[in-house]
Amino acid sequence: MSLPQSAIRPVLPQEVVTALSELGATSPTARMFHDGADAVDLLFSCLPIWESDPYPKLVAEIMWLGEVSSLVSVSNKILNVITVFLHVISTRPSTDPDSNFLRECAEEALQIHEPAAERCYITYNAYEFALDLAHLSIKTPASPIAAHLGKKAQQMAYYRWLAYGRKDELHPRALMRQTGPTQPVCKAFLPDDSDVKCKGCGMGGGTLFTCSGCLVSKDGHAAFRTAYCSRECQTNDWQRHRASCRELRRINRAATLYHELLLHLYKSAHYRGIGSISEEDGFIYVKYRNDEEVHYTEKSNLRQFPEHLAPSPEVANAVVMAGKTTTDNHFGVMEKLFNAIFKGTFWREERVSVLPKNVAFVVERDLVNVTRSLLSSLEMHEVVRITTLSGLDIAFDPCGCLHGWKELISPWAKYEKHRIAMAYPEHEQFKALEAATVRLEGLWWIPDVESSQVELVSTMVDALQTQARSISGGGEMLTVLNLNNSDEFQRARAHLLDSGKTAADTKACAVRGDPTYQTYITRNGWVKRIGSQEMYDKLKQVWLTDELYEEVKDDPAKLKELWAERLGNVGL
Image 1: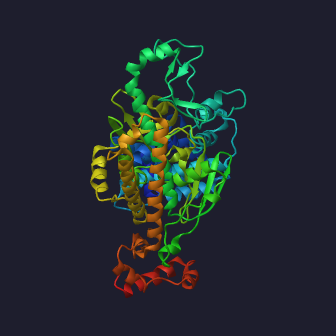
Image 2: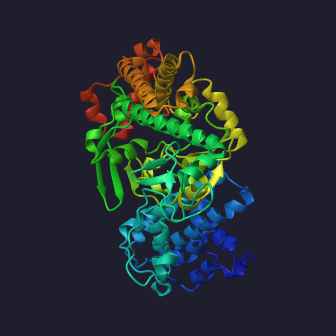
Image 3: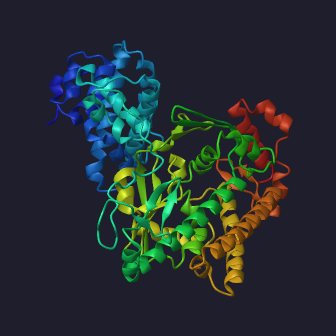
């Protein structure tokens, strides 16, 4: 129902009239607006209720999932409420201590950065406002949640739950029901199975033997375990179990090999300067340096990851992986390595983007020139769903260390239940784009600063394939992964790792010393790779000296003007 024009004061700005009309005359927003409610009370009372879990819907919107008509209403409602809130707070100030922060966030949310792209503006700005609420919730002291505490307290509890990684036991509804303090639950591992039974006869209890060929475990926690009540049962079941046993062993070998090479490559070719890394209260805080100078002063943007800054190897791996978990930032770079190692190990694979839950810790990245820090708990995360010929359904998560998760592979059903808040498979057209661009050794959506990593991957893969042929007498990687003798495979694995890492290190050193791999900023602010000796010769007349950069770096307008002038002098 539209709000009658007679019920709206003529002095109201048109955008407020429109917002109230779209929300409806009987909506809580309209009622609270006309009753003279406090602006902050109005905001938190009228945003989508936390019980409906609106955040995944916003994520779905910015990923363009589902039907647009059913999605726009969520973000459109948020921006309509923000519009009314901003008008109210500008006419009668709120007494809420967070009112100034919320007002700034609301003003930012209503800015149309691209007027021609209203659909993107509606969805992304509403999504960013939700991120602002999550950041506010972190600063808000945690308190027992109950209905009588008010809408703001309930909304803050919801966004705090999101920010801290959607832990099941900390859901606001669970907190409302609890009668005592919440006991911490380890999230590094999936829950252990308590009802393990004999694979042969189905008997449970007592001492069970474990098939060593396909046992996948870490620190005493088994992701995959095939158990038997006796050696006789194990022998009798071998014909049925043999295929899945060998498949699982092969995939586990491929996963661990891929993951170690992946981390090494990212560490040898890191492209963001890090100032500090610290850990506190379930958060890993990463403070990045302002690397703008490398694009103005002829310096390489690739460097060795500063592992010494991290308090532990686990934290270092999480920070390395931060920002590289989505399709464009992970498999966009690593596709060739994945194919080289996993080729022939499974029947079918599907890339699935997921919103994580039950994270062990959160990585908060404080980037330079970005309004808000980035929380790993609120970002999409890509995993691979692998199906084998024998019917095994496996989750392979190469980036799970970002969330403090220890398993690389696990049963898909268990992974889905305990670690996925929302999931969607890649679109077919997205796969087609990916396949077409990977053949060009670099994806169109990969920034130039990451294209160097794609070349490092190619160099690493060439070395791996050469080493695999040497080990297997002319065979492929699959032959090495299928080696029956465990000791023989471990020796082969060591050779593969050594050849792959050495090749990547050598290439990374060459890239850091080659000026054509350096980057510069174009007139419109894009970071571009130099690419050729001719371009480098031109830019030698453009680069700023360290002294000149220090003089103008704190005046963005002056820096931009000076840089544009120098680019123009050489025809760029």
